[in-house]
Amino acid sequence: MNEVSGNWRDGSGAAVRPPIAWALAVVAGLALDWLYQLPFMPAAMPAGALGGIVFLAGLALLIWAAGTFRRAGTQIQTTQPTATIVDQGPYRFTRNPIYIGMFLGLIGLAIALDSLWLVVLLVPFYLVIRYGVVAREEAYLERRFGDIYLAYKARVRRWL
Image (tube, rainbow, N blue to C red; front, side, top):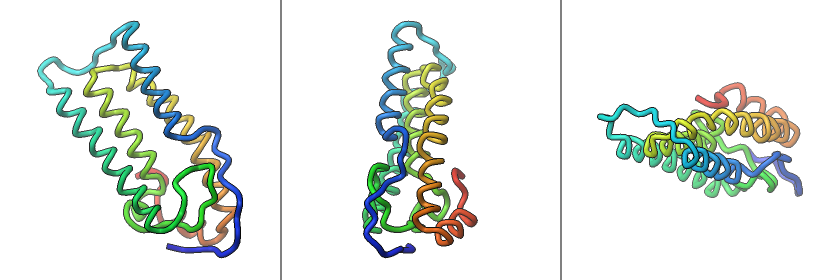
């Protein structure tokens, strides 16, 4: 964990709150599936169990990442200032484990519900998160922490 002292009253300026973007993707996928089903899983595949496992893996990653943030004493919400660069827990492997958890959750739901619509909506969800959230967070963290963040960014991948 690397801290910068000072009283910051700023945030990343993310275009949307990630949980809202995730919920919108799920609701849109379910609505599209209700209007016109697009199954994609083989009939013999235990889709519910497999999807449940993927969903729970995403949820576990998200909880681990959020807990790591809390223990570090920094905010999870994109609208709040960041107190420190967290490089513990899942942040040793990826700079965005919460978003990876969200992607896995959406994939798990797509598999469990056998909905190709939810898979298709991964694309706009990814684009919103990547360009409307992550790009802004990275710019904010670079302004806020300078070389500390640049060193972290150089040694830890954005995704995996």
